[in-house]
Length: 308
View 1 (cartoon, rainbow, N blue to C red):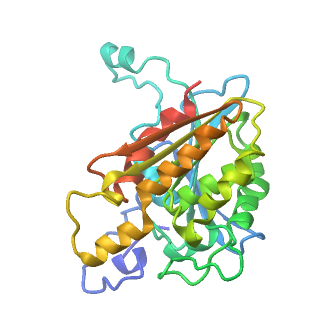
View 2 (cartoon, rainbow, N blue to C red):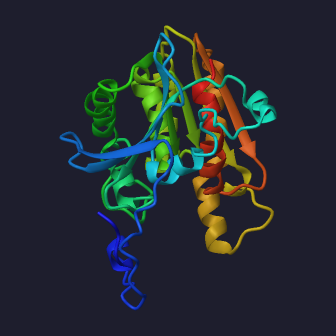
View 3 (cartoon, rainbow, N blue to C red):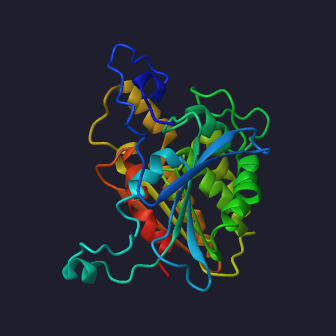
């Protein structure tokens, strides 16, 4: 249905602005579709964005990139996703892009339209904690739904996508940022059979008194990958070690959360475990803060996910 006023487009009060022309339509991204789905496991309703492949699937099926915080992360991939050749493309441009691998993107957001749904993701992306463990989150009241959300992804949503697209069962990539990065690493630790590639951008390893990090040494021994798997963990140096702190409160928060140190420690444990068939890479990016790393990762994860 066309948006006919700013008040229809958001919950904020835009009533003082002039109505929009009836012919104006909601903004859309090219080569993309969306739908909504309810989950019996989480009790939440989700808006799913699907980035359509630019050509037919290979014999094994499409490599598939699953993106959390989809309303924020998916648009950043738009200029990186391979596209079909256009009649207006020059020969030089066609030679530059070459024969790019095809892939499918499935991004998961929330139906309230919030780009980052603070409370929805705090519930879905965090693991259940032992009794008495402090979450460290002062913003959201509910946490611990990661197991239910993973069931939604794999038991409810994945079959819906599989009905319409042939997916390569050995080339599923999970991308998450912040709490989504925490969910990505928690999934790697606990249910690695569902994904073969993991990109955790600025994972919130401080959550639950470093719960995921503390559990890693005992869990990593049980990790098994029958096929080659890859893990990328990234963090911005300004998340803990900026050139200067904005104020004392910011300094205390960044030092307490220790984003850089925690990621380095997670990488050390993972590397020293020498898990067969598991490749690991770590990037610390100078001059980048926490939110920069969402854009940094979403910009690069398409190649990571679709590469042979």
